[in-house]
Image (cartoon, rainbow over the protein chains, first blue to last red):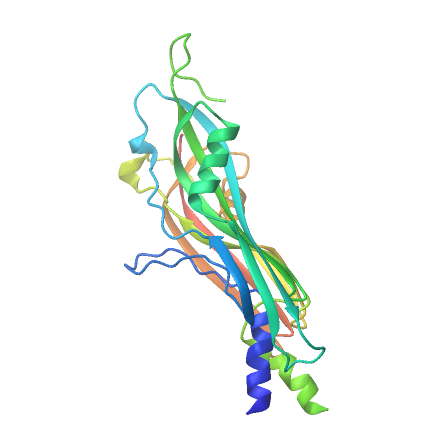
Length: 156
Length: 113
């Protein structure tokens, strides 16, 4: 029993690297970091759902941009309080890994963008010894912007 | 002593990642287009793409199984929008998962942007 408990605790040390995302189901799947051990503080935002546009939603005459990318991250630190597998840890989590922040970054990099479509969202999971972990949301998409002042639509 | 090995083994088996080091990208969502969303043509090419990550000895995991990489693999040098997209996941695991390869597979057609 103690072995199983220790295994469960050790498993929590590793960052979950499997795909948990949005499907066709109605249940939302938030992408927050899983807390472990004794949580000192938890101040994170994560992605939940994003119904993105497709090409047919692009306004006529809009200028198309081939690819834009936004990234937002949550980070966590979990320090074991003893050097064995049975030990729990003290942890703290912070960061804004939300879609909102990733989209804000796109807007910052491309101030002329008014919308994105053909959107892919991925998660980047990084962990070293389960002590430091980060989980980033990456939004990659095509974008559209207001037409150039010079006239017709163009793509770059 | 056997318990010493059993614990990390059980732990790793439940997480699909590396206990010592993990640096992977995993797919989360892809709002792909339907034929009604894009300008289709009868000669739109069918394409497939994949992106993969690996883990060894349950200790280290690395790679990129993101939708973005699979899409770029499928499109190659084309500039287009994939539609009618099927996404699948393929896992190869050997010897109780000592070596595991996980891939995201995308297949569909490509319309002009």
